[in-house]
Amino acid sequence: MDTKNMGIASVAILFFAHMMNDMYANFLPQLTAVLILGDKLSVSAGTLIIAVFTISSSIAQPIFGYLIDQKDQRWFVHVGTLWMAVLLSMTGYISSAALLMLIAAAAGMGTAAFHPQAASMVGMSSKKNKGLVMSSFIAMGNLGLAISPVLLLPLFRNYGVEYTWVAIFPGLLAALLLYFYAPRISIPAKQDSPKLSQLLKSIGNSSNSELFKLIVIVVLRSVVHTGLMTLLPIYFLSRDFSAQFTGSLIFAALTAGSVGGIIGGYISDRFGSKPLVFCSMLLASASFYGFFTLSGPVSFILLGFGTMALLSSFSVTVILAQELIPENTALASGLSMGFAVGIGGLGVSIIGRYADAFGIDAAMQLLFLVPLLAAMLAIFLKSSTETGLHEQIAAPTSDEQ
Image (tube, rainbow, N blue to C red; front, side):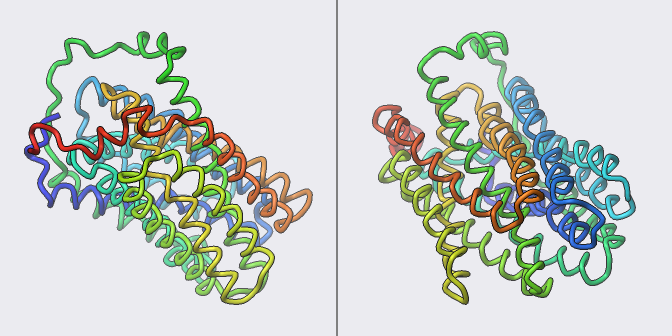
């Protein structure tokens, strides 16, 4: 990619669009929480709808990523954003769970189109402090996730789910900005670019073995992250917290997660990825259990700290995937941001069935064990010095010197 046209304004537009895009990614948990508490959906049906959205995105993102790596598809970012906004704004008028799942699956294609192209653009925008730049991009997405319950949960709870039509406007604004201001870049012809069959055939080599471990860690982290976004609105509202207070608590927790992502990118640039991933998963599990067992302000602080720890490795895993498949960075972004995250969403549907059988409290306790599994697997990741990641990110290139 030619990054000379990647000005600050263009990157800022991508950051803003990512925030709006991920606000929609947290749309369905707010809608289904209101429907569940209104006895219009079971917990398992609600989590399945959310899982369908994430799985649709997960399957499509690597495909979109591969297509982008072959030929720049700039239009994916604005069309994908608008597509998702339009479909989700219709959901308040649909009473059938099966039809909601169909709409969720179609909407997931929108975020699948946006993320690989946008992440590849951002990844190419900086060779120095790449971890910090990518973590800032990821943080804006996490901020979008945080905004969603503040705006949407009170809207749906207080005025009714028929007001989903309001949600079309942020997506329309983001799509217009992307259409006019997203980077106009070109991908030169790739003489040595591997074909899809070659990429699949190379699955047994050491880098793809490392990629497999990385994807499993992202899947486990996604189970916890998506599970929190899905179950926390139900958990708080079932304890008679107001929709506004519930939205504020979730906003604070997810905002802490976005800050954690930036901190994690900074730490990984200097101390390596493996210690960051391992320690963050341990801290997340411990903090979440503290939130669950304690009460009052301390418990809310621990919830925020747990989310901060959980998401501190988000940008790190994206960069690790891109470095493991350097000739196909959009495909790598699709695998780490889409496929693995979406498969994690499937795990949340299992948590939903567990919640129907044993209750929300039991489901959350089970959820908080999952980061321990990710920490155990992180022990077997290669260190930054073994993969060469730390040096590739931190060391200036000849163009920068």
